[in-house]
Length: 190
Image (cartoon, rainbow, N blue to C red; front, side, top):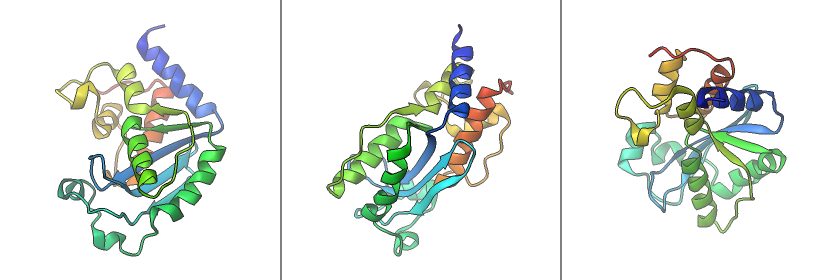
């Protein structure tokens, strides 16, 4: 079976499985001390299981602020990670698999945020829709980030609109729609 068909079969399995959640984060940055400041978790039908801002214990990197627009003022009254994590842990305890676009990044930032508060992440299965899309679409048509398609580029290639980019709920929904499009064998636009 070729790579595209394997990716399509993966997407079909994701769409038809129970216990799969789609997750996205926004963060204070990309460094080893950065933390999650927004989190969204959806089921494969698009139901929102968790959507929240998170008050960090570290400053927001100006580069990250330019991407998502979430300032410390936006987060001043948000719950801190331990409160959010209690809700997230309930979802994780029921989940069989977590799918996210760039899973290594989201997983690392969730783990880092947990460590900042003395919490541990349970041993969970994660899968990366970004890597699966690279199998589905082949290499990016332009010089892209680490030979993977950025989420916005992947969505454009499938003709999927992406309002609210770089906010956790919008990006989680975009990832869900991308997986559904792959499952359906939607052709690439370019």
